[in-house]
Amino acid sequence: MGSSRIIHKINAGVVLVFLTLVSFIVLYPLAYVVSSAFTPGNSIADMPIIPFTGGVTTDNFTNLFNNTDYPTWFRNTFQVALATSFGTLIVASLGAYTFSRFRFAFKKTFMMSLLVLQVFPLTTGLIAIFVILFRFGLLDNLWGLVLIYLAANTPFNTWLMKSYLDTIPKSMDEAARIDGASHFRTFFTIIMPMAKPIMIFLLITSFTGPWMDFIIPTMVLRSTPNHTLAMGLFSFITERRNDFTSFAAGSILIAIPFVIFFVATQKILITSLGAGAVKE
Image 1 (cartoon, helix red, strand yellow):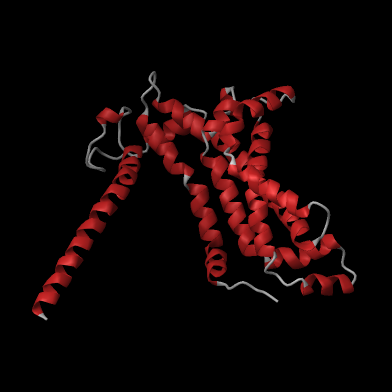
Image 2 (tube, rainbow, N blue to C red):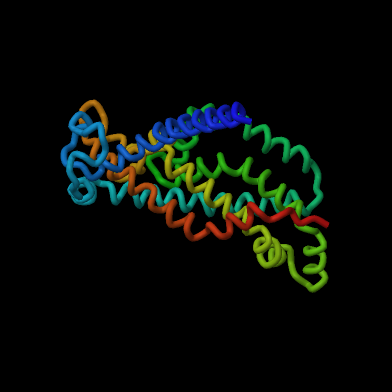
């Protein structure tokens, strides 16, 4: 008994040390960025190794809003992410409802085509995307960016939405049809309320991609007033400019929409994770 207790304590100590080390590795960069946002100075070389030991100031946030185009970048990114999120939800949900409830020729072929399209990453078609946007005059245009994200999100999200709609009994549709409801009314009044958990999930995932992306905006956007947050923040830490404190301040503000959205939808998300599938 004594040896087993010693072994148990040793194992618990090893696990505790490992978890402490992992927590430090994960939390230290976050604490360092938050500390830098409130630390006087500009260069990363001036930042103290130990967070929150170099003083506290809000000048970095003031500089961010008064002397840079950060508000414009924030507005551009929010518009693109919001349009992409709701556009993806509408297109994917309508497509998923069609594949889930109707029978038509080449249905399986279309579904397999969506799956095959999802296999290839968006970056493999950057040249073709650039040429298409150039031909349609959508370069350096936020709507061109929205169309790219919408096309990239549709295949997988349609599959995901269809899988969820398949768990909703078709008897609900049949009862609505008997009462004289059209397909659109059935979809908006019966199916959408029952599919709220997966719709919230699609809104979140479709919003986060454009919000944090850097590669696609760099290819599409040219002028500074059209830049997104990722492009604007990157301009603070280039070879010609070293303004790490403003970069840190802007990085913190990026998280605000996510915090608000998660707080507003956490009950729905928790309910959706714990709810079982509804089947006939």
